[in-house]
Length: 207
Image 1 (tube, rainbow, N blue to C red):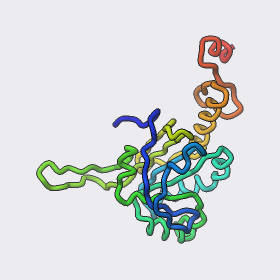
Image 2: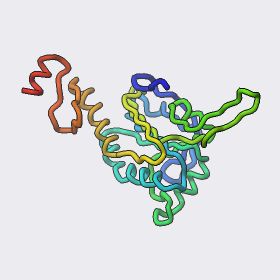
Image 3: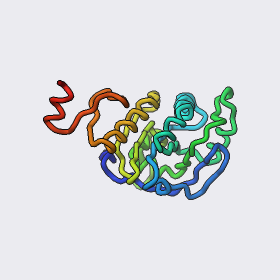
C-alpha cells in the first residue's frame, strides 16, 4: 500500500452527523481547506467497545484541538442512522451522547478504501464476489494541513486503541515547523528545544 503522507488528502462527499444531532448530506473536507487543519480518524464500528473509548478521548480534548485551529472528524462504515442512534444513546449505556464533532458515514466503504484503511478484501476471480473478513475500517488517523496535504498518518489494527495526546503532539510539531522552520526530534513536545535542519543546528541542539 502506498502512503498518503506528502500527498493530497482524498476528497469525498458523504453524509455526516454534526453537533450530535444534525444529519448533513454533502459533508466535505474541502470546506476546511485554506482555513483549518484536519484530524480525520477512522474507527471500525458503532456500538462496540474500544471505539467509544477513543471517541470520548477525542471529545474530552476537543478544546485542545480547537485551540490549534484543528477540525476533528470521525468516520466509520456505519450508516448515518446508526451514528445518529449511537449519538442519542447515553454514555452509561455504551453510547456517545454529548459528542459534538462530525461523524461521517462511509456506508459505501469508498472513503476508507481511498485512505487505505479498509479491512477485508474482495475476490472475484471466478466471476463471483467473495468477501474475506469484514469490510470495515481499521483505526486510521490522518493529520491534514490547511493546504489539504496529509502530513502524518497512523493505522492500528482493531484491538489497539490510539493515543489522543500523540495526535495533539503531532499537530504541535507540524505547526512548530510551519512557524519556525525548525524540525522536531524524537519525543519532542511543545515548549521543548527543536532543531535547525542543518549541521549548525545539529551542533546547537546537542551543544
